[in-house]
Length: 166
Image 1 (spheres, rainbow, N blue to C red):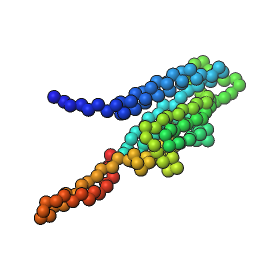
Image 2: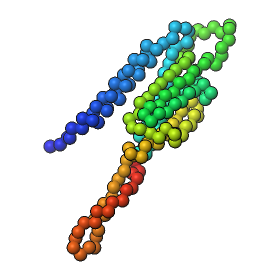
Image 3: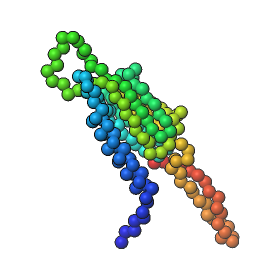
Image 4: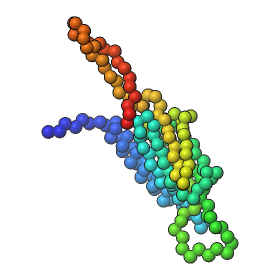
């Protein structure tokens, strides 16, 4: 028989993240412009590496000068514009599924980050942000020394904090 403990806070947090994704998708679908350029939203992924969160965004055809990136303690906001490569008056597009125009995306973070220590890399259309977590939420492992070799078998409760290697 497996015993499962109820963790309502974690389950509520998972539900909140899923609802955020649903509303992000809905707002992306209804956020289309009226001119010939169609609004688009870049796809993103967020990875927890233990002491950091790693944020990736696919931004094909976007140049670094057309990007605006803002990071707060609890969210990442990216905005910019993807422009047509060949804007000519006599260009006759027969078929195009590319999406051009302005975009904006805000991603809520599951934990607080040190927004003044963010590292950014933009290469081959992929934006990578390394977001260090605040000290309070980093995974910590506490090693307890039991004081081997004592005659009265009393417990030595000195603790030593060690960073986890997740």
